[in-house]
Each structure stands twice: as C-alpha cells, then as structure tokens.
Length: 415
Image 1: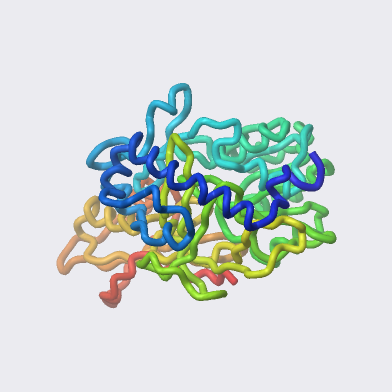
Image 2 (image 1 turned 135 degrees about the vertical axis):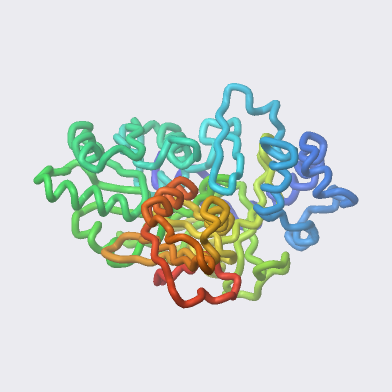
C-alpha cells in the first residue's frame, strides 16, 4: 500500500458520482424492503427515480430526534436496521439514547482510509484511548487500524499514569484519542520523566484540534491529523498531508454522499455557505438516507493538492442544535433537563461549556424554586456526572437565568 489507500482515492470525480447515483435507486428500494422504518419514512416515493443529487434532495431529512423517537417506540433500532446482518456483531448505545449497530465489514466504520492518510501502516503499534464501553468510539478506529495490519492496544479510558506506562512499554508508534487527551498524556509523561521516543503519529477526533495544540505536537515530532466521525456513520471526513503540511479542510470518505443544507431544512446552501452536514450511506445492514448530523461545515470547492479527488469540507464548525460534544462525548439538552426531574428544587438550569488550560470544562448554573431547601451541590455534581458521563461544577445563581430556550451554552472559541 503506497501513498494512496486504493485507486478510489484518485478516481475521476464524475466517475465517483456516477457510481454512487447509478446504484442509489436500487439500494433505496432494498432498504425499504428490508427495514420497515425506512418503508414508513420513504412511503409514496418513487425510489427508482432517485438517480442524481437533485433527485436525492427531494427525499425527507431524517433527524436524530426522529430516529430516537422511532427507537423508543420499537426498540432497539426503530425498524431502520436490517437485523439479519448483525449476527455475530456488536450493538452500542450513545447519549440520547441512540442505539447503533456494528455493520458487517472488515472495517465497519470506514476508518482505515483516514488512518492510512495519517501515515498509519502495517506493523504500527497503535495505542487506542477511546472508550470501548457502551459507545462505539474505541471500536471505530480499532477496526480500521487492524484492517490496515496494525497491532492495537485497547487502552480505553484507563488512568493517565497507566496510559504513559503502557505507551512506553508497548513502544507504541501511534496514538488514537481526543486531542485534549493526547496533550494530557504527553504532559503526564513529562511529569514522570518517561520518554516516548517511538510515538511518531496520532489520529485524533471527538473534539477540536486547536492550532496551538497542533503546533505543540509538531514540536514533539508527533504528526497529528484529525478525522470527523460519528457513532452512526463512522468516519465521514479526514485530514490529509501534502508537501509536509496538513491540507486545509477534510476529504469526504468514499461511499458517502454528503450534502450541506440550511439548518432545519433540506435545502442546499450556496457555494462556500456554512450549513448542516447531511449524509447518505447505503450499507445494507444500516442504510442512512439524508441523515442530519446536527454538525455545521461548508464545502471547499477546489480539489485537494494531496491528489485525492473526493469533495472536501472545512471540517467541524459547530452545531446546528444545542447538542454539544464535550471531551469526546455528546451532551444532549434532554440530559440536562432530566436534572430538574431528579432535583425538583431546581427551577431553571443552563450548562456552560468553556475551555481553560486547553481542557473542556462544564459548569451547571441553576436557579431554585422559591422557598425550596438549599440544593446539595455534591448531590447535584453526582447527578450531572451520572446523566452525562462527565464531571462538572455547579453554581447557584440568584438572578433568574434567561428564558430564551438555551439549555447548553457552548462558549468555546472553535476557530
């Protein structure tokens, strides 16, 4: 395997588009036949006529809230999965909750192509710090790395000292995890005076890779690239290198059809306009048609100088809704609202997400009902962690929180 993962990386864009849309009509008909949820969602549509991007744009958007509602009514998958293809596989549950299957493939979430672009090769020893528990995060890149012929240590979320020890003992050449956690592990290695001379590259995701962080990693001679991935779809887009530098934006993964639409609609944006990422993936086990990710980005019109010919997006540019990723985990407004059910003395809540010392921080601001007992802050801290899986601080506010519908206020500067 050379500079490119395979011949698809450099195929003529028109041939890629023709292959995708020539097969799409039949794939949609099969999805409706195999998955009753899709039969309902795409009822009364002539699927055989869906053979172009403009035809695809006539189909309804599927939003995560709709998928969650269908799953609640018909657990676990709401009729949107062909479960006969999942025998011998895994299922996961992400915050929401949203149930996701591991589809049948040697590289179920299409991570190998992104890892290859980041320099991962057969024989690399990969230290994977994404969680292998409940959500598919750890498995997404684990499966991709092993498909490339890498050896993977599934470190998951063990203690930072243990991460440093195993990185050194395993002589890992590559790291997988969030950008924040890579920085944390390297800082801990410095504190412990533990050298990591074999660590040369990393693939990060689950949080923004800030320019200052990338510069620090470069100074340590660790080449770091990031990919944009979701639990539902796997790796949607990824960074590449050219002439020793990271190319701006991210290449869209093969087999995926990505649209960018005006938030809350299915209408395409104008050139260079920021909008919501909508993805179509026609895997026979779990087809997703015009699935709205809730993430924002914009297309880059020019082809990448790295030689890959797929479309590019500018990367992750925030959320179209209030669902917010913190330390690699999504926090949903519904989780925050559940605090008021478990603590009836709360009259209003707002989660502030900020950044300090290159780390994401959460602070729950709250009002209490008139005459209610003083809230036990420790209990509220525990409930916040139980509901979100993340630690945070809490703060009582005497002044009434604004009645503006904002539940999660993301104050991080993500540019």
